[in-house]
Length: 209
Image (cartoon, rainbow, N blue to C red; front, side, top):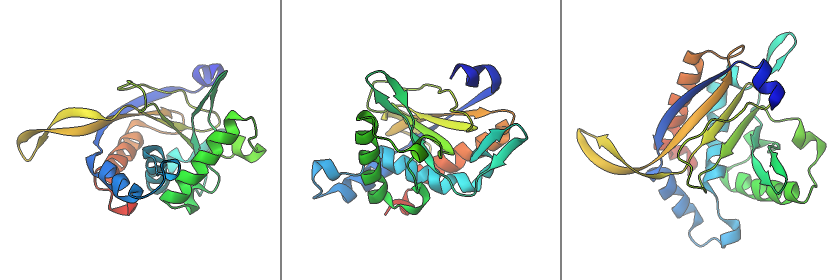
């Protein structure tokens, strides 16, 4: 992390997204599921990233001595808190899993990470990282890029906020997303388009089932 902050010129972009419809989709998909098998918002965010990153491929890349190396298929790393620190292993085959499959894989990954049983490829294959602190009273934060990746998304707590809808102020469940990107590989316009696409995808989650 020290090396990342010293050598990667971080830029930060922030956007809000309404997640009421996404939460409604999760409620519907989780109806009748045992608690331990429920699809989480983190899994939904991973799926949204898998769909959005190919639309802005500069963010799905590794930085090398020769410059950015674009990766064809997104593999999402997910930050997991351990007793002695933080780790962000890869959800291998992220792009090939549906929401339920991602939720299952995420539970398995978290369990094995906390037991110290991660596989070597899970420590090296992530092309982009998600860190979600929505389960804590954290509204917004910015994360440090995990080398050799060039981007990481930090997601804060979903909470009721006033929002103008069709000219009228209404209360909606909103979350704040902050993209940290390596400015050597990604400029502000690319990051802004990425957040715009992700925001639109979360607010109209027809893709989620």
